Length: 106
Image (cartoon, rainbow, N blue to C red):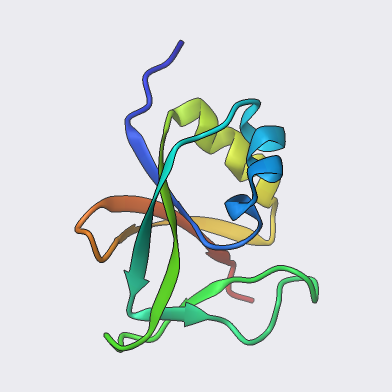
């Protein structure tokens, strides 16, 4: 099995254990963390799903969880998130470098 060396920050549907089980075919052990300088975008992707947007304001924070994942896991997450989202590297409040999904700019 490929080693898990990447971090993935989630704030939406991937916070749900059942969704993670479907995407990754196993349960992941996460830690609570925050994404500072971002907020949940007021418009939802396809009218249903949240996305984050950078504001650059320290008081804006998105709470979520960070998981240690493999590159295969990231490919599964890419497939799950689909064409509407892009994966971006960010630094979380804990100092952890992680990937986060946000809506692709139109």
